[in-house]
Length: 127
Image (cartoon, rainbow, N blue to C red; front, side, top):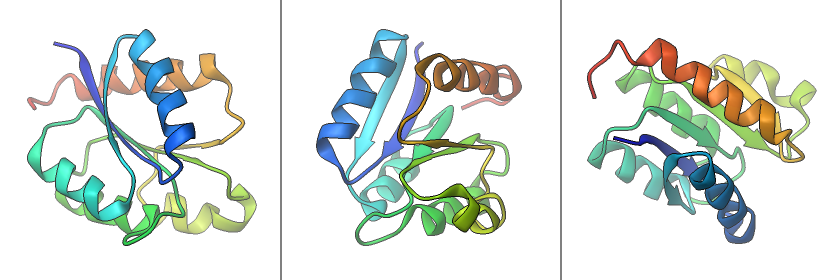
């Protein structure tokens, strides 16, 4: 079974690029283009990790992360955003429940490496 990632980002072009890269790395990616749709997917399927943008319509990524974290204390949540981390750090790592943050100019090797490493910690939990 492939490792499932929930990816929420309202930029459909960027989301398509991320999905393609992660698919090539062996991940199964479920994409949502707003926070409410991502929340519905999260409640419908089991995921190994979440990759969230911060600014999205209907439900922003930090509020989504808070909902996800309240339902699942162990799932890794990563933010992939254009926001300045210095400005959003307290919200992302506090209320948003982040395990990590990547700027949208991310390093592919670091992103996929951190996602793979997070699976080591979550493989003890049954999906």
